[in-house]
Amino acid sequence: MAVYKFKTPISEQDIRKLKVNDVLYVTGTIVTARDQAHRRALEYFQQGKPLPLNLEGLAVFHCGPVVSKEGDKWSAVAAGPTTSTRMDIFEDEFIKNFKVRVVIGKGGMGKKTTDAMAKYGAVYGAFTGGAAILAAKAIKNVRGVEWLDLGTPEALWIFEVEEFGPLAVAIDSHGNNIFLDVAKNVEANKQRIYQKLGIST
Image: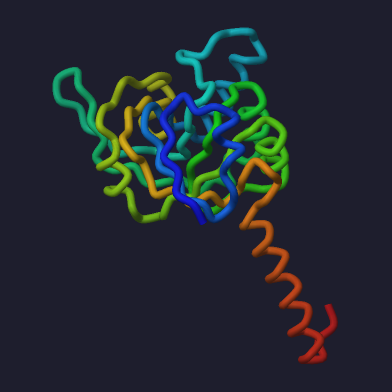
């Protein structure tokens, strides 16, 4: 296990250094995006419309933050991760089209996303669920918000962060996925237990 501290925009070369079980801290720009923001971004791409900002080299955070506003200034109160499997249907195309380097969330992602990360150079950083205040402390500035018409949790929030983490690298850019490995082991152990108990499946 190694600890890395990267500043956005992160290069593919740097991302390729990471392996599962490494720990990553991100400084710079991260953008929140959940289901609706992923859908709209991909629709924009298909229509040839530019996004409000260039996502290449950035981190995308599966998060519906709790924010407050004083005057015209937003601040992040809490920013816990959303379960990433909800975004699995979009993430491979999102990585391919926008060249994000880090995807942050909880609960992991599947084979399509793992394959895209290996092909285009990205990693999945697992952030502890329930640590929303810890995440908010690393957010030093809310640079802006786009697509607020989608609702506060679904909007594209642009955060400036300092050493956001710790993120456990759970999917790397070499095709390794801790979540899929655990699922395989669980299935194998389950079959062994069934055999010992004389249960046929």
